[in-house]
Image 1 (cartoon, rainbow, N blue to C red):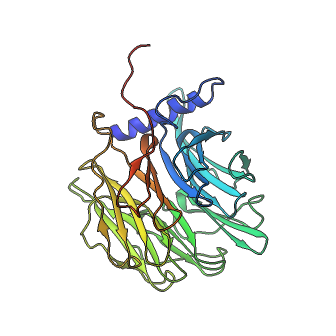
Image 2: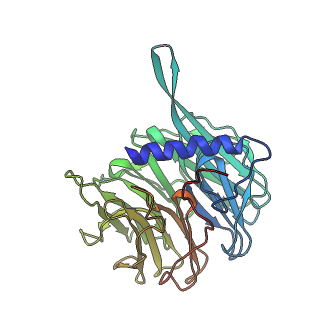
Length: 366
């Protein structure tokens, strides 16, 4: 619960900072907000999104980052680009409203669109109030077809670049965490309770596959047939969490568990640069370790890369949670996470370097 309270504090305190003209992040840099996802348009240009409407931008491969105005204070959970100019970011939050002795839960969602590589963003109208967790676009000719997913089994689809979003029928009310398309027809959605949905008609209809038990947070395809979904299996005794990696070789029809208790920690992100090389990232809150796994055979076997404990050990019960990862080629990748964490590798994940600058130790006077 202390982690939850801390994240709530970060969310509202930083949202307030962004709303005041003339106040800018000075420490840590580029920001101290949790970063939830990262996407690279090319080898140099990348976008990361996070809590309190955070959008940061790099033009030198992730070495340096600058904050971009988003126009919202809502958390942003996912970002996707179809070309060098056009990108979308989605998110939202749940909060409580109070009136006298009465209280009720309120949901909100946000969809942002950029046409200039992320320099400026414009809000698009969504057909839901539920928080959105992921967005994926595919290009069909000159048309951008997109799917966004989120809480309460929410699936939104657009066939005109996001000008209009239509809610799709869904057989589950689980939270849907991620969506990935292998081509214009075939896509997979993953979520809580081991939920897996699959489409073969571009997202018009979704069929629910067998549930696997634990939550699945991310899914990525190395090619049209080989895909990896990652998550975890929570233990009833409150101990360390078992990592979960599922692999498919038939475009998502069948999935096989590749970990079988070999790794500990929640896996929140996975990325493949080709059919063989992939990286999965996450954290183990029990041991305060960040988790990075690598595969060189298309996801059949995985090796844990030692990255050590949080660089902020003086913060009680606070570690650098890793939430998103993106590689621009076989060697260069970026991982993002809590308290503004930005890690970068240039040797395929053997070594990771912290790109965030400054400290998050408490200041008591000025």
